[in-house]
Length: 392
Image (cartoon, rainbow, N blue to C red; front, top):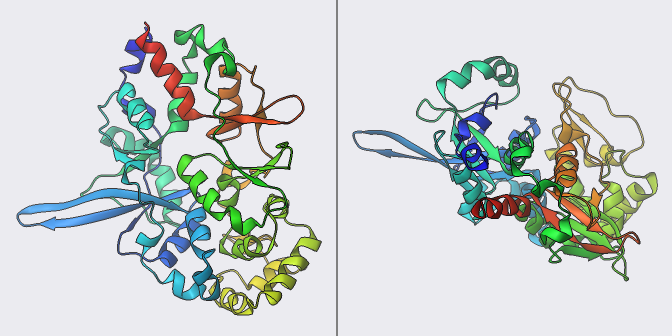
């Protein structure tokens, strides 16, 4: 029964999904930044289109970018002093070099094929939206057109299929895999001890490489003390809710302070003053001035002030450089910096439910004394389901 279930078309998982917003490979980092600020999606797809004689234009999605890509790029030493020059660079400088992260897949492909591609390293599967599915998203499409362009390629529209979509779909029919879902994480052997971690007191700037890597792995960076006690995390998911001005905090704060800074409640006033003071100590006033010009919502200085921000109809800025949109208060906009954890004895189904509820692709695994054991990811879970099929 499970085998026939996994033979279902991936088009079943795409029902109601909105079309991708996209950028051309000819776009700049500034174009990507503007597009990300005007959509409720975490990622923008990037497309390469080539014209052939006597043939229609051939277009292909070659990658995806998110706010974290922009932030990590702007944190590079050369870019800190001249963010305007950095933003004028081609979008290729922030595109992941691994082309296998985004893979095209036909709607008639099986769910099993999709799982195999994910286990081979794919994060997002690009699936054409069938004509019968387009009517179901027409109202949503009209609603989104005001804030973000939805591009079609050769008359076709596409959607993302993610690891979360597959896990959510499996959870809806989890009974066909009994007794696997009731087994604990440690008994399944899917807890990885190979985690990205940084000491609480280390400079946040030293975590930029780990943050970029965690984005590629769809995980997070653990914050630990000297005894490897788990304190919290710097999550790309949470960082993606900030805008480019959070670069100032990364350049000046410790990893532990950055964790507090990007929390959705906004940074404490003392951290705001620390950032301002350390920017001056590091002679980064030029960056402060350039962000004053670049920010579409006000200056960096106003982002650090205690006065209330003026609300606009589409976007408001808080002290942390966090932005939200009145059009749709999506789950990713209210994610707190608090890490989501589980125990080695937690059951597979409990962890699946918890991860989906919090919109994360991973769970930190800790002991009763808060010592960090490791991490479990959606990819690990899918591997277990795939191996289970082979024994049937």
